Amino acid sequence: MATALLAYLAMSSVALVAIALPRPAAARAIVATWEAGEAVLPLDAAAPAPELATTLAAARPTDLLDGDGRRRLAGGEPVEDGVAAVVATSGTGGAPKLVELGADAIEWSARATSRALGAGAGDRWLCCLAPHGVAGLAVLARAWHTGLPVEVHDRFDPAAVAEAAGRTTLVSLVPTMLRRLLAAGDQATRFRRILLGGGPIPADLAAEASSRGAHLVRTYGLTETFGGMVHDGHPLPGVDLRVEAPEGEILVRGPMLFRRYRGDPGRTAAALRDGWLATGDLGRLGPDNDLVVLGRRDDLVISGGVNVHPDEVEAVLARHPGVAEAAVVGRPDPEWGQRVAAFVVPRDPDRPPSLEELRAFTRERLTAAKAPRELVLVPALPRGPSGKLLRRLLGDGEAHVDAGLGGDLP
Image 1 (spheres, rainbow, N blue to C red):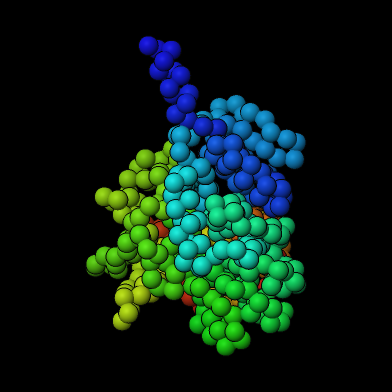
Image 2: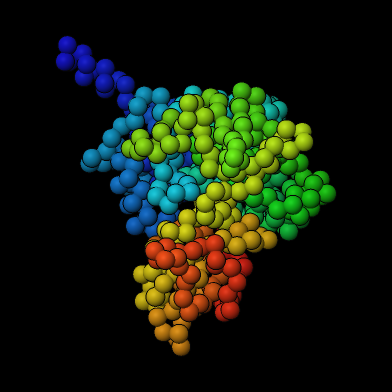
């Protein structure tokens, strides 16, 4: 009987393969892993080694596939049968979240989105988003489940995307990407549909794109919903949503929901309430019962479609020898949606660190999108009686040192 039980347990779990490869190779490996019936943990191959190590330690995959090939990892733990992906996201609480997504949820989302877009013969997806994020991974899943071809770029480059327009017909972009694509010309109009999400969509950007003939579908979703499950303010068929009083938090439910946070039952229980996902976003329903997203309940910064939690960046900045204290907030930015702004108390006010110096220091330890794009030098940080940082009081600063730097998208 014990032998039978062990055999059953072996059959009821599958390997979790961490994939750290350049994007086109990662896309091929993800699909091949799915076809083998295994689960994937996509990683940013360009991330600094300490960040990769932290994710691997938290996720405990059974295997790692990188430039040196595939190998078993000591201490790895398989996932439950039926789980197809684990996506690492910083979310809104600071500590990394490891979102377990079922194969059934991924397939449902892929097919529902494809139906909503009318995707079919003659369509071809363009994937210029990183596959280690849910938006890029969702593009691969849609193409795989519907049998449509997909073209994968190794990074977002406006010229390359413009050249692919027409040859490819469907694409997912974040607002910063769309703005740069529009600046490169009118090729955006050659896509049959552009899914636009990953953060606040500036009204001027949407208006410009529409006036120039771009066919936008504004999406709302989370990693826990395998990306967008609300299109242009309305949930996809099969998705329920409600706005809960008194705060106005958005709750959603449907077959696209994640299963759990890997290794964190407490966080899972807090997020899933009787089958509903508490998103942490605030919203309201408009006159046509369309969802209007108002923002997060906490301090999450979404810069260029990337989630940046202030605590993570602050911890790195605090290690710089020229920094006595640091606090991070998001500020509105016409290109990035929000930019990461660092309020810094210098150790030596006469020789404060520069923005370029802090950006380089941060990029050695975190991905590029998390590096500050604005530096404000202050004599002290606002704190309450208990010493808690009063982030809401970080408004205007006297000494602004550069802002709105350009840079490569993640």
